[in-house]
Length: 474
Image 1 (cartoon, helix red, strand yellow):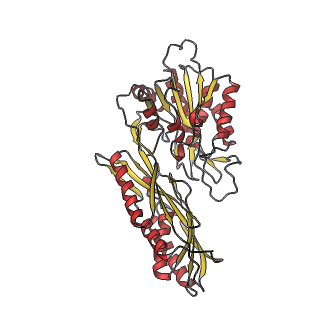
Image 2 (cartoon, one colour):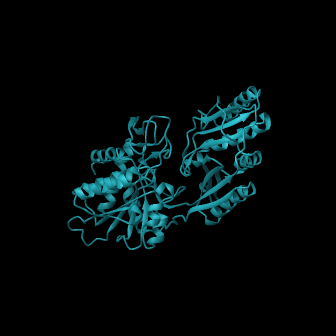
Image 3 (cartoon, rainbow, N blue to C red):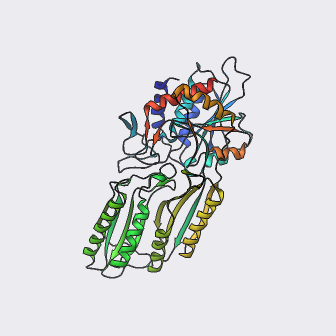
């Protein structure tokens, strides 16, 4: 498969805004490309695109095969001037890795999209009839996969191209649920004589809440909660608002908050900030070395949280489980359950928080959800759940696994690692609509998706395309 053509497609894809929730332009872009090749295509319920490619000559009798990936990307910004709804993603290569200029790259899952575009346009490939399924809004709850009706797909074998380690053939994934605590309150006036300060915690690496959760990187919202508890206790601080993170499936990299303190407490504030800078640098220096705490005087806010709500919020944030909860009891090297405190947002009279709980075990996913519900309910918040989906259960006797496993050493020179991944893949949702599907997932090396450190190894893309070509030909 021609890698130059692949990279040309990925470059064209980077010109098209495709953040989650805004997939119309990229679906139109892909539809126009399919039309230019005179390929049958349709936009299904939920906004997904399905493109059908006829079988190569002599392979008309073969069973159709499905290629699948999602078109949307998680957007993060490192403080550069960039509008994700209008501006293209720019990038550069460093030591064999392609990386965006201050934003997420979109290799997750742009690699699948560019690969399918390459297959669509290459008449020299040998393959059965193909269905290229481009799903939307995977990153905000698998919405496209959930909306796909039964009976649309004709194939019985599916290759999901959304894996981020070329050493792995993935045959299963976690289920997940989003948990939404909301604090509602009547704002209070700022006490007379108070001074206001904005506190920023930044410089964190963040990352994918599934693929990077085991790295034990710092969570900006959790750091802020611990700091706030000390400021309330030691400096009589009052909280006006707090903003951190932007999606539940990324580890938050930055948080901002505004507090007021009684006149004369400024020195105490900066002393506490310096203490926590030292604490966090010590605790996370090996995995998150650039954490930075800053404070500056700002104009007084319009209002504050009531003290009782403020204290309950801070205590709940401190108590909430975050990070790796449990490993597989029979395989401690494999993660089973995790929780990610993904974001916190403030508006007038309202504080909203979002967690994403992942687990390969249904009961543990429910237990952690219940734990969060208990903590925040006791703190006075209303708590709801959404986007609750089951994981993809592995089939180690899968025919497609046996085939890809046999072909894999021809490309890589060694056996693959067959595994489950601690993240969500659309295979679990699609299995609910099409229970007969035989599925596997593979892809090139991508590091730190859902963060501005996201990068893809260019050499691994060539190997990924070679494996895909050989699988299609088999």
